[in-house]
Each structure stands twice: as structure tokens, then as C-alpha cells.
Length: 271
Image (tube, rainbow, N blue to C red; front, side, top):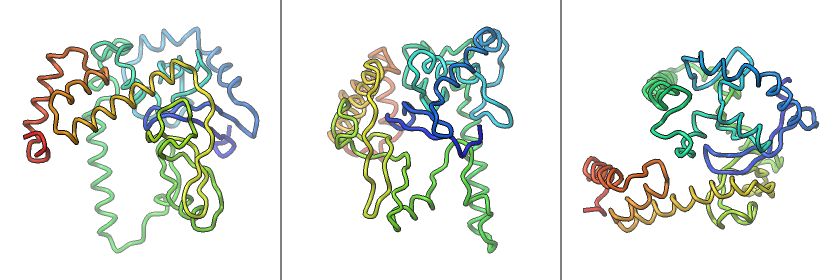
């Protein structure tokens, strides 16, 4: 489908936003996506068994179920899609990938390797620095949306300035747009850019399991903030355990001590 015909609507947290509506040309696209998954269901495991490269983004070809097996599997089950896809979504489900095991590969090392991602960021930084220091105008593509991440800065500015009421995905405090999640938590949601700011749109209901996952993450974030404000090493350990990525209290304590020691000049409240 042409990209400009596709629309979405969702709710969640940064990197764990669930798209609850997907449409193309105004029509529900969810059945079309299920049909595509049905076509691939017989070969997805074989493709996973032979997969050796997990790219950060899929370009120049149609995406496959095997590119993001967790995300498409969740969509298959619940008809909502975690739009950050596996590179980010799996971070929130460490219990499903013990020790980072991910379809025969190690997360962060072999699958979606973090060193490669950091290297890409360094390359982008060098390119942006060269352009910033150049007397030439910004390249035209800097004003265009790109696949994947796109801040839509100019469109948002125009909508706010001229009250165009365009709808964007933004991060806002929960003031009731998702009543099943803690009030004032920062949610990634849809909002209309109106004169004077953003007006959050009412989110769709979510499956209880997804609400529980989001709420648990919000609780862990609140604990992390409390630990930082109070300078409490013990609360920092509790926040790590609440997050779920670290499950051993001794490991969490050792990690907390290492982090505080290495960043001591930035963390005077922990002294």
C-alpha cells in the first residue's frame, strides 16, 4: 500500500507503544495484516532457523514475520502492534528472553548489536557536524520524512502556529486519555497540535496483559526517579529488580555499586 494511505492510532510508553488501529485508505488494515501473516505462518520458523543478521531496520524489501517475530507474534495474538518492533519491544519482556536468548542469538550482541548501533550513531553525528559547519544550505532530505523515526518537526510547528489541528504521536502526561494507566505518567499517545499546545486524544482500551506490562514499567520508572532524588542506593537496587531485566538481588546490588562508582561526579546525592 502507498505509505501516504496508511494511518495508525495507539497508546503506550516510549519504545513500547501499541498501535490499536491500523487503516489504509480509511479501511481497517488489521485483516489484511493477518492475511499476510497467514501466508507466512508455514515458513516463519524455517526463516528464523536460517536467519543470521538482525538489522535495525528493514529497507528495500517487504518486511517479513521473521524480521520481528515477537512483535508480529503479539499482533497475531492480540491484533495490536508494538510499533517500535523487536529491537526495542523485547527490552520490556526480559522474562520471555532469559539471558538475552533470542531465536538462537544473543540480544545486543548478535541480534540488534549495540556496538553497531553506536557506530551508526557516531557516523550520523559526524555527518550532521559537517553539514552544520558547512556554508551550504541544508540538504533537501533533511526536510523530508524518512522510514522509521521521524520527528515531523516542521509539520508540528505549522500545526501549532496556525491551529491546523494535525494529529501526531507525542509524549504527554496522562491527564485522562488512558484512564487505565497511572495519572500523570508520561505516555506516548496521539494528540492534536492546536494553537497553544497539544490536546491528547482519548486512547483505545488495551488488553489487561498489556496494561499490566505498561503499569509495571511506569512503577519501576517512578522508583528510579525516587532513588535518584533521595540518593538511595537501596532504592536503586529495588528499582532494578522491579524493572525485571536483572532478577538476582546480588547482581543488582553489584551493578548499582559499579554504576554509582563510575558516575560518582554526576551523582553527588549518592555520596
